[in-house]
Image 1 (cartoon, rainbow, N blue to C red):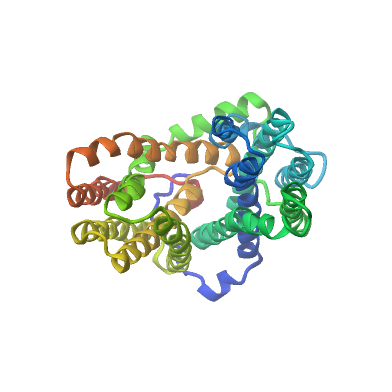
Image 2 (cartoon, rainbow, N blue to C red):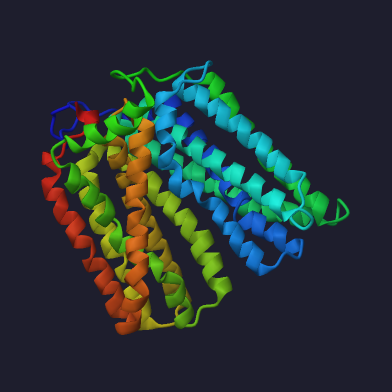
Length: 428
C-alpha cells in the first residue's frame, strides 16, 4: 500500500478484450437497477400526485423522502461488517435490497396518494432507503470485481445504465401511464400498472446477482461494528496525500458544477423557452453526457488514470466557454444545441475520470464505507458551486461568468501535479 499512484500497468489490456468481459456487462446492469427507483420517488411520483390533485405544498414536502441518498454513509459500515447468511457479503446484500425494492415499489402501486398520502410517503421513504442501500452495495461490488485498469470503462457503463434507467422510470413511466389511462378506465389503474412494470424491471438485477460470482475478500474485513466505522477513517488518513485528495474531490469538477448551476436561468434570460431547455438539456444533453462517459471509459484503458484526469479536466473546463459564445450571440438555437452538447459531452468525460479515481482510492476491506464517504464528500462540490453562483451571475455579465467558470478549473488541474505523491490501495 505504499506504491505511488500514477504508475501505469506494464502491459495495457486490449480495449476489445476489456469491453467484452462479464464484468462490463455486470457494471452496465448494476447501473440500470440503481437508476430505476430514483424517479419513482421523485418526478414520476410527482406526476402521479398531480393527477390525484395533491397540493403543490404537499408535493414539495415529498422531496424529503430523498434524504437517504445523501445520508447513506451513516449505515454503509453495516454492509461492510455484517454478512447475510446466504450468497456472501456483497451478493447477499444485493439480493436483499433488490427483493426489498421489488416489494416496496409494488406496494406503492397499490397505494393511493390522494386517499392515503401518509402511507405513500412512508412507502416512498422505504423505497428511497432501500435504493440508497442498494447503491452502497452496488458500488462496493463493482469496485471489487473490476480490475484497476477497468475502472474507467466500468464507471462509464455504470453511468450509461443509470441514465438509461432514469429515462425508463422517468419519461418512460409518464408515457406508459398516459398510454394506459384511457385504456384502463382512468389514471388510478394506469399508475398501478406502471409502477408494477417498473418493479418488474428489477428482476434483471436478481438474475444477475444469482449468475455473478462473489468477489474475493482482500485483507481482513472489520471484525466488529466499531472497526467498520473507525478503521476505514484511520486507514484513509494514514495515507500520504489524504487531505489533498479530499480537496481535489471537491474542486476537480467545480468549474462544471458552477456552469450547470446557472444553465437554466441563463437560457431563460436570453430568450429560450422551458420547452427548448427541457428538450435540449434533458434530452439531447443527456445523450451527449452518456456519449462522453463512454468515449472516456474506452480512452482511459490506453491513457491511464493520471493522463485522463489531466486531459478530461482541461477539456471540461474549456468546454464551458461555449456558453460564453452563446452569451455573446444571444438567442441562437443552433449555438445553444452545440453549447449543451459540447459541455455535456466533456463533462461526461470528466465524470468518468473522477469516478475511476474514486474507485482507485478505496481500500477493499472497507469498500462500502469508504466509497460512500468519498462520494458524499465529492457532492459538496455541487453545494459549494450552487451557493455563490446566483450572486456571481447577478454581479457580472454572462460572458464574464462563464470565463470565471473556466478559470475555476485551474486549481483542480494544478493539484494533479501532486498526483504521484498520493497513495492508492489499488496500486499496491
